[in-house]
Amino acid sequence: GAVVSQHPSWVICKSGTSVKIECRSLDFQATTMFWYRQFPKQSLMLMATSNEGSKATYEQGVEKDKFLINHASLTLSTLTVTSAHPEDSSFYICSVLRDRSKTQYFGPGTRLLVL
Amino acid sequence: RKEVEQDPGPFNVPEGATVAFNCTYSNSASQSFFWYRQDCRKEPKLLMSVYSSGNEDGRFTAQLNRASQYISLLIRDSKLSDSATYLCVVEITYKYIFGTGTRLKVLA
Image 1 (tube, chains in turn purple, cyan):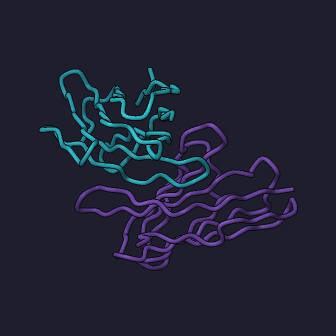
Image 2 (image 1 turned 90 degrees about the vertical axis):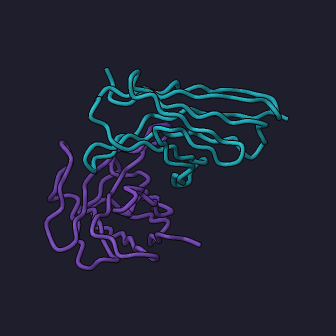
């Protein structure tokens, strides 16, 4: 069965709208979750590392005020794309880290289309 | 030099063929290694972790060569359903670096 869920799976919104994406770990408690973005025909790009109970660590070039991450519990992390613009249209995927094996399990992803 | 490099392919092979992919990494401090499979417009799914001693899971065999800093994936008796992009992932102190993926097409 699924280890990670993401909601919503599809979002189409107008420019300027804020969009919230939820990532849930279903099988185990996750102190660490990752948020990735993938553009067509490209590999996954890490946006930020989400740590439960503390501030997220953002990768270089990712605006923390634009992509708000909250990891308030061991099973839930949220990514909010604030004031989305067409260039933010992408496939956003979260993953949860199983510490013992250092293995990541990915959510099914969220396709965001900003018009 | 990229931190993790893969031949993008595509590798077009007939059903039943054996195909191998390599992935090189630049940081000798890399600690863990994985192969993921990603189907078009889907999330990556873990195929297998890669261990120094090599490991096998059915038709799939993964090898790690730390001296030459590469990992490999061998697929035997290819099936149509093996068509996908195969991502190499390298971990250094909980930082995960993805290769750009190798695209495999298995042809009937």
